[in-house]
Amino acid sequence: MMEFVLAFQEPHNAYEIHADPLKGQQVSLAWKQYMGAMAAAGVMRDGTQLDPRNASTVRVRDGQRQVQDGPSREGHALFGGYVVINVETRQEALNWAERSPSSSAGYTEVIPFLPIIRA
Image 1 (cartoon, rainbow, N blue to C red):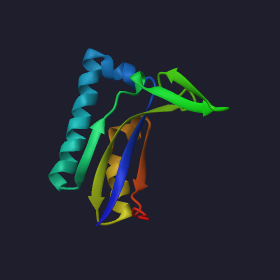
Image 2: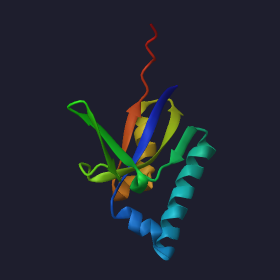
Image 3: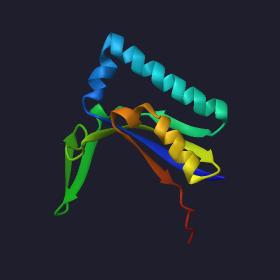
Image 4: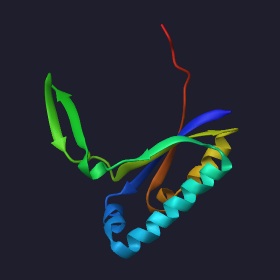
């Protein structure tokens, strides 16, 4: 078995849709169905939803800390959450990523775990 993180990236305007009473319900239902399918298949190990609109971005330049309220302005998408899945192959992880609601609105990154290097 192999572990992967599916990192859900959505465009900035997707969060306006989430906040809309009617459209937001449709999006929530799609996410519930997707997460339910992973749980039913027994591949989901962990995960959480994030609120990137209330993030802070920290950089250190010339030894000085710079804090920007809100998400990084450099990205075209916001990191809205992730799940850790345990599957047989990379192809299976890609298949789960394809089914993600974020893959239609933005994109889903599939990131394999690496073994921990111990000193």
